[in-house]
Figure (cartoon, rainbow, N blue to C red):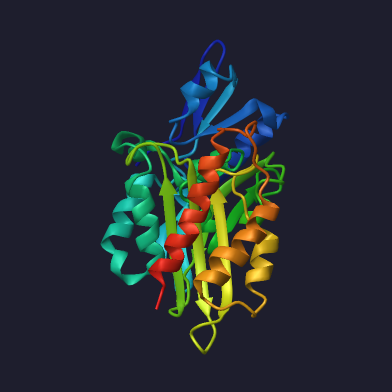
Length: 303
């Protein structure tokens, strides 16, 4: 049985709690939450320290907390603990890939996400939180269109609550611990698809990533539901074209090339804010890949 660990140095303190109760005790010991820095996969710490010159006096390692290591299929979706590694999630999805469309597209993205060494250490929770302040992510567009829920716990009063993915970017995460991510399954009559464009096939950050969730009405031709999310646009984690989705979900659009590639494209262009000064540049190429992904989705469901 693994016991808790405490290592006190001259300029830094390191703790490895094995229960949430011990973690709560540590929080009570230090009055300023900015003193504490949580680590799990630790794949970005050296970059953070060297490039951003961040220094944290107190490090708390979270991987031994059992509540953060849950990985199970529930009746309505997949529950993933925040400290589950990407490689563990990938192995789980591979075994059950044929049973859920959600598993298939998550597994496909993880295949090209990072090297095996990084996936063995990087955690799902770290991926969610770190990329929530950036403009690229491979998995978050999928989580967005599936309307995933994030379970947080307050370190001071120990209360738990669920948060919508769309609220993550605007929420102050001080004194909050991400416990788990719940990704609902789609209905059998829904279609899920995800795409990624990068400079290299494997182990590269996506220039544009996207995910779509589509459902038709009873006729099988008119759009009843179309959710979409894109990485690589805007200043935040994901560009979610709210007005475009409202337009697409109005019940008036049919699944035809003209409706999708012309009307939906015009709506998207009115929402996207991207120029040569945007982070990452390549604005024209990103536009091309954005509409190319919509075309790919349309062709894959063309009847």
